[in-house]
Image (cartoon, rainbow, N blue to C red; front, top):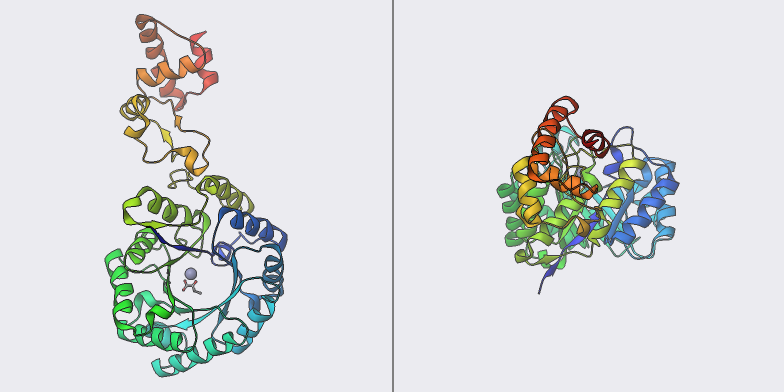
Length: 379
Ligand code: KIV
Ligand code: ZN
């Protein structure tokens, strides 16, 4: 039987930190309701102490959704936790996400503190958050660069204080997949109370490794992943929800499943891209414009013979209407013949050869030949 991986979506918190992509409360509610339909387990709705607008968004999202857990971020500070607890008042299922830096770089340069003081502050924060909610997640910020032994001590201490989930973030996107997987494994092997909590993964994409690191973390035992739609987020972004979900689906042999309705992935991606005014890069895995587009002659010929030759998933399964064959100067006769037939034109071989020569001349000039161009050509 497959093991369940919980999807913690932070599009509306970490994702929304992208400059120029801020959403109004009303827009956030639209996205939150779609995330609920998509099937995410947790929606991180905002950072209530940061602004009155973020506070209101958490309140309104709490009222708007009923299935997912609504989560509010805080630092390990009383006033932050109070704001998070207050903002979550109306949530049917609620979680406070509190935490503090765990690497020596953060402890020294950001908090001017010591490991022991950080431990104390972390325990106090978790205990205070537990006075508001039963479900408290602790984040050990910059765990990617933290000392392993200290990270294990911190994890054990916050679980002891009542944390139900412990997030081991690679905040700066520093880790390599093996290294990150080892970190999670170390925690499982060295934290005595680890099975009283869920270990969560939160990766940033500074080296383009967020999805690989997240998969390594899952294989090492973590059961919650923190992700965003289209991988948006601070700097190079967060782990992309659609990539992790589809990697687990395509690789059934790994033995994991999620609650995500994959056919909603593409519409969800489009919605977030439009609302946040962030175009999706054309070659983005799963949801990019070219993710199911075939343009070279060799690939087009193979794809037309059998789609599995060049596609590892069916576009319908992720909500993409159909695969496409892009006609360019790299296309072969097979692709041209196929497109002409779709337009209602059938030719014998010598005629098709003549049309193909003209097609190549046109493609060299126009780069991409669309249906209108083709009609002009055959006329
Ligand atoms: O990247 C990070 O460490 C975070 C925490 C606030 C969870 O976003
Ligand atoms: Zn983050």
